[in-house]
Amino acid sequence: MIYNLPVETSGRPADWVVKPLADIAKVVGGGTPDTGNPEYWNPPEIPWVTPTDITKCSGPVLEKTERGISQAGLRDSSATPLPVGATLLTSRATIGECRLAGVPVATNQGFASLVPRDPNDSHFLFYLAQSVKPVFVRLAAGTTFAEVSRREIRRVNVCVPTEPGERAEIGPLLETSDRALAAAEAKLAAARQLKTALMQQLFTRGIPGRHSCFEQTKIGEIPTGWKIKRVSDVVSGNIYNGLSPQSRPDPPGVPILNVSCISSGRCNPRNVTYVDLLDKPHEDLIAHAGDFYVLRGNGNREYIATGGLLTEEPPPNCVFSDLLIKIPFDPDKTVRGFMPLLWQSHEFLRRLQSKAVSGSGLWKIGLREIRRHDFAEPPREEQEEIVNALRAAGEYLSTCEAELHALGRLKQSLLQNLLTGRVRVRVESGQ
Image (cartoon, rainbow, N blue to C red; front, side, top):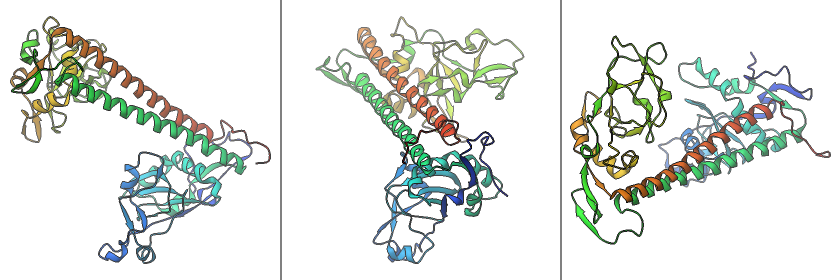
């Protein structure tokens, strides 16, 4: 049997051919030396790659591994030396993940690595393997233990340009997209660190340079002139639990905000599920843009008491789950946006989560604990400055997220077009 790419190849360029992967790469397995023999592991002369090393490696090139094996371990096991430029392809459990070997390595038996028959095909082969990942996954799906064999990988059909120069040009183009992605990921990580550091500073020490005197309180040291308040001091009316009917992922029914809607300080109405209600819900149980929701029940303690601001209008008559609590902050008692931002700060949330209790595998926090939770309140003018600073940091973070998302889409488009010949690479004569 021959396995084809999940793309249409009938319209391929005349100078592109369909051939088995084995024609352009040697498919090499790996092995594990006897773990009870220390001579096989010391000294760790050769980096020894496991699937965990692959998933932990954030960039396209792998140069460091958690463990290494000795020359004796390599000699007396089925581990095989792999050159720089080999595509390290996982073939067990985690299927089809790959990195380029940046140094000579060996792998364990969870790999079917690709060594290009033409060394100039190294990067082309790496990206080709990424485009064929759905085939690898599909081949492994029919087995009890998720694994795709080297024999099957060798027989996977791929569509490639016959001109070596074109293959050599495609790889660097895709490598450029990876470098752009890496830069965008680093930019996003820095933006997140900036916002976290700003929160730590602004909610505990205030606007930088503003305060020289501090006082010790029951929640720690705060600037002199700030007040200790409870959440109940800045709400208007009641704090509400939601509804508890069984929900389903698709219509028909009444849309309902649920646990999955809360993430990174936001409540996303696009993740609603649907419920059947016999009676029209009370107006206080209807969700509106500007509402703030807190997760009061979850199996993971790290998520309990996290909050999300509903920044866009949800579907009409949308309600919310009983695992959420709606907190109506009073704009006359606190600057709009201050409390939702404070709720994201590590110190505030850590103290609130410490009040959660566990039962029947579910962590919960009650209305009483939320209402009585203390926080440090700056004067109103400083609250406004804090909100403006953190909103600016949040907007920059959103811009970085959008940039990374756009570059990810661009790379996928390049993979689909460059590796099928839909978009051709000009090869200079003489190459």
